[in-house]
Image (cartoon, rainbow over all chains, first blue to last red; front, side, top):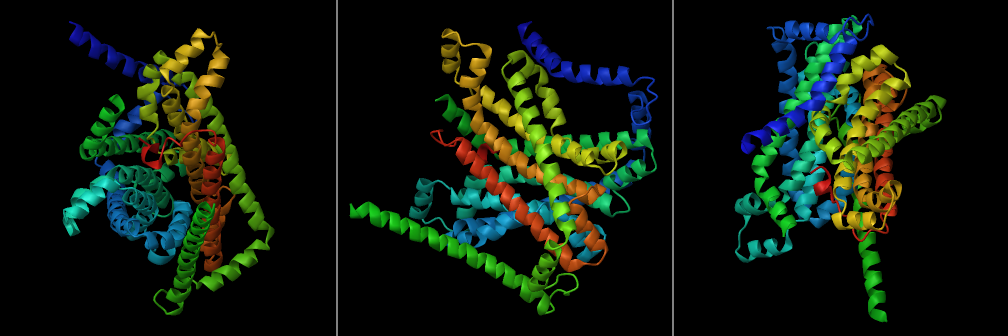
Length: 261
Length: 273
């Protein structure tokens, strides 16, 4: 009995507050005459109509495609550039101020800049996402490579492990906790840039339809779009966490055992 | 006596070399921005030479609009950051010091936090138009979670022995917060401040680009659509410099506030863990 009761209690505790909040929203908004805050029921009806239809695919897929292309390209480039920069002290000293500056440029300003270069097509949005997402990955990779375990480094050198084997079995795993910190920051920047670039100039995508709804005062539709964007954010962060748990499982285990001892 | 002296001198000269290398990097970057458009690799219309951008920057500095825009951006950033700091600290300590509240709210926080604040843009526009409140909604929503999460980590990290000791000595609720919880939480809070300060700036500029609230982001969007490309790059540089200053100031504050601390516990590797 006990084995059933405990997880059951945990689920109840987990769901209690969200359920209460949604119920509050449902009942306080029921019959709401306020133009901006329609009843939750209306929003959910619209949501089902809009986003469980064939119309959802042409609006959501382009956004997600641009985000994944941009994010993955930024991750690859950031790590590929970050490893050599982190490994060389001179390179690091020379490039660090420039990189710190580039990272400090708030990424949304890239939207107007890149429109100049590439117009308002898909390339612009993917490029905006790449150029905004790359800096956290790059700088965290640099920091991670720089603080690799010195003893391990000497072991690797004594065994004359070099080249790709050194990179794959020593440098990347050693820096991976830091790299993932950067990737996590990049992901939230990427979502911001996806939406902003579509709001600024686009003909499809979730940011675009969201602005259309708002400009045409289609309020329940707008609310349903906000919910979709929220769900995208939550699902992406869950996927990210799963990937992180899979790749960094060894690291979290190590830290836990260190903490316990 | 001479050994430490040479040591200090060696260290200062090493630091000078690092400085010089960094300066060389910046100079190289500026030179690249000068040469690439001049050589025709990229059309100078899209990317004017660095010197042209600098001239445009000096022109802009003499316009009052520049300072208004700068002031507007900083105002929205500062107010938004202050609101999320106060709210994050209060809510964080309240939730963190109660086991019941912590378990009850955990799932909700985990659910609300990854919702991108840009999702709120249409709502903010409808409610506030392009006034500063719109920016504040985005800034506060994004940076509040950064502060809250760190405060929650911090409060949880309080040494049980210290807490028991405080209780045995009969410290009241406020004294416990002041002398036990606060010092433990401070390093975590400072990490939160550093992250929140950067995020708040990003969202302030986002709101200016996307919904035309007054500020640097709006100037960038306007100069781009008006074809004043050099001026646009000048504003981009200004935005970057502000970003650097915000980062440096947050780090300086962190060092200062934690000067008493034996070590700065959270490195960036663990900041988001």
